[in-house]
Length: 311
Length: 322
Image (tube, rainbow over all chains, first blue to last red; front, top):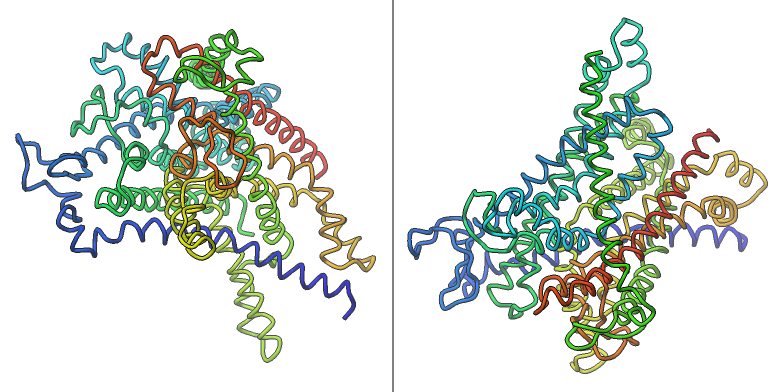
């Protein structure tokens, strides 16, 4: 075997080895986040302060009729995740309700109706929205948007679930748009031509033929957008007000799971129950976003195979 | 025509998105540009961040992103090469059906191919999974793995327990960010490699070049513009992320610039976060805050703009080429 062949073999081996990094990284993330959270399930010392049931079920030492309290610093720390979960759902819901019609509407417009010249521009412009760092969106929500929304809706709390949700929508729109747009453009041209040839109008073709054919992909875009919204941190940390109130009122100041980690991990004692709970929240976010992304990717893959024929 | 109305609504939805983007950018540029000066860009903050500039934050961000790029780009490019050039271009089902009919040495060869197909599939899943992990979870991971496991491990074995690497530092923040941005560079490189015509590979192999020679001297040079675009997008994304560096190395204020790998660092995004949430006098810091945001935007957004523009051009050319 000559020198060239040896180099060739070596290169193949090295490339394959380096390519394992992604797999190793995912495994390490899983292991190290869960390892720090595990003592909640196993360590009796930690159990005195916090356990699975106390994270999710009503607290026994409920004060003033409030069964769910997040109050990790105090004489008797209370670690109910319920207010944080509700906070996350509230901001996420607002974000999706706002981003879905805009993102999907824009996707249908770009793929079905926009003149070719305009289409070339819209796509990169919306991609640019994804290029704004989330800390900048958080800043904009905190300094500018919060005042506008307060004036418009008369919120008592300047920073609240709605403000955070609207800002979050800005981060979610590019995902919903680009995944939906991909699904719509993947619909074969022959579908459109057949429909138009039968006398259907452009609008009928878009709504009754193209959108139904791409529907799973559009739904997947919502799932992926939801996953992004649940995990997004800086925007909600800066714009939600961060009060852990158990309430479904969208005008209340609110605290999400992700923002809780960001706000509290810096001051927590290494290895304390509070530290464990924050890692537990991280593990929870990891699992939830993993499942949402897997579901989204699965749907996108199926649509692609169905529309393009199995390869 | 009654259909003008619904189509018009779709156009309005598109318009709203574009207008929102314009409003955000316009607001920041208009309010920030007046405070930008040479002094602002080259001097450190003074009087508890109520005056002075952002030079240490710019320096820290650039240093951080440089380290991140050095770590992420080679690994990402090589992973993409593996997925696009070395992984067998067949599905697991195809190999399995061949495996059922093969015997002896042929069976072993097919079995090895099947393993490779599975590894490639799992790698692809890992890349998409990595792209979906929330950035704050990367922060937790960076703290738990790089700082407390690797860093503290280095201290125990090399420094006799002295605290050197077992604390938040720029190298740990950079490596955390490198993992976060890895999928971006992988996806961009794969796209670029796919666009290289197969004829080129075949011609090179037919002339007697080895696979590695073909990849390194024919395929990679052709894919270089695409890889560079991916690198630009990676840098743009990495420079803007704050959640992963909160606990892995970013500092509120430092009197000295970071010079060693285990130094902490100031960062533009983190600076924006601190100024907007913890300022004792919001009105007084507002111009500084806006100017800082503008600097951060120019750094991330202009890179992103360049990346998206080049990508758009190349996609058009590839489509024409096919």
